[in-house]
Image 1 (cartoon, rainbow, N blue to C red):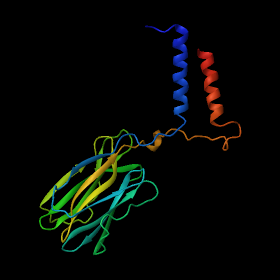
Image 2: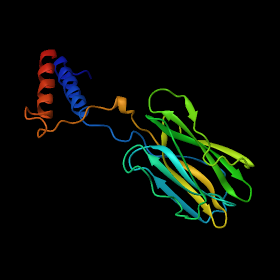
Image 3: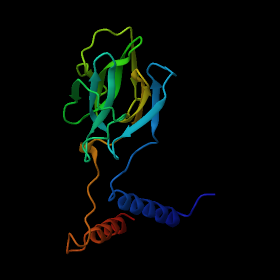
Image 4: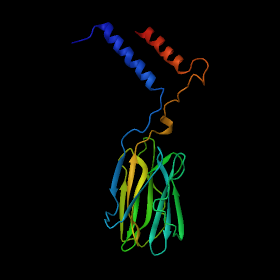
Length: 222
């Protein structure tokens, strides 16, 4: 059954008011968390560790390397404070420390994992992508530059998502033997909605005045 014209106009007016009010509040995370495949599918691990950025995406990754064991620990660099996650395994037996960071306004979206038999993960090469509509994938240099890999595995976030964390799988006596990406979607900063102006920030009425202005315009249109 069709609504009378006046009721149709009232419904349209209400929807426009709701849209105007909603636009005053910044959007949060866009979709549910997702997970990539595991890189090596090595099931001989003893511990699983999870590191995650706090409500933001990863822009870099750091690794601790121990000679004769490969990579023994990871942490992520995040787009917003706190700048770094905790270290995943807490292993202090490092000989080398390596770090890679994506350019400004880019986030990590995947890694190429280098695995050496009897050593586990010996290197990671991070991939990054813009938060805008540009779908070009670029690569940073490998972390350790260890060329002794027997296999490589490329794991990436789903299209439109960026890395927010890592599941890290550790095997006693071998260090890290597998990794898995934790992914989510984020709005580019250039597309962010305007901040809320509270009455305390604007003595003229702040957000209340904005709603009044929207209602005035709608009264004219309808």
